[in-house]
Each structure stands twice: as C-alpha cells, then as structure tokens.
Amino acid sequence: MKKYRLVLLMAALVVVLAACSAGANPQTGSPHVDGDVAGFWMGLWHGLIVPITFVISLFRDSVNMYEVHNNGNWYDFGFILGACASLGGSSRGAKRR
Image (tube, rainbow, N blue to C red):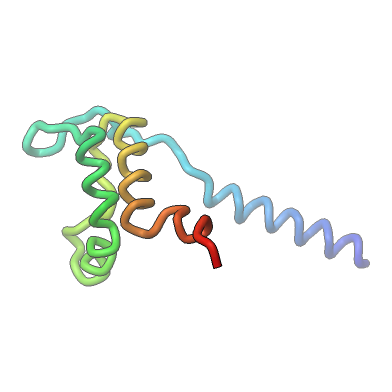
C-alpha cells in the first residue's frame, strides 16, 4: 500500500511540475500597438522596476510585469539582469558575516 501511495505522489508531483514549465511565447517578434518590439534595454528597464510594477499590477489590470511583445532572448536577458539588480541579486550571498 505504501508503494502505491509513493507512486501516486510521484505522479502528482510530475504533473504539477509539468504544469509550471515555461512555454514558447507566440507573440515574440510581433510589434505592440505603437509598432515597437521591446529589446534588451527595455527588458533591463522592466527588470529594474519589477518591484514597483508588481505592486501596481495587483491593483490594475492594465499593468503587466513582463512585455510579451519582445524580441526574445535578449529581452529575457535584460529582464533577468534588471530584476537581479533591483532585487539584490547574488550580492547578499557573497557578503561576509
């Protein structure tokens, strides 16, 4: 009976983790309303202001943390760099106690 529960638990864990996996962005490379596609610098800016944008997005539906109309990997790279810079990055783990 214990093996059955373990197998069931593992199957549920696999399903939950598969549901959280990232997928492709079908709007990558497609321009927004103004005709622009967000690139590295816009991703960096969006990453830097992510704490403020998150709070505002809780109360307004028109504000998003991530621009879906982007140029792909360069926007993602800028967003991660900006988010690391604004949220502390790895500097907290490297500082001496």
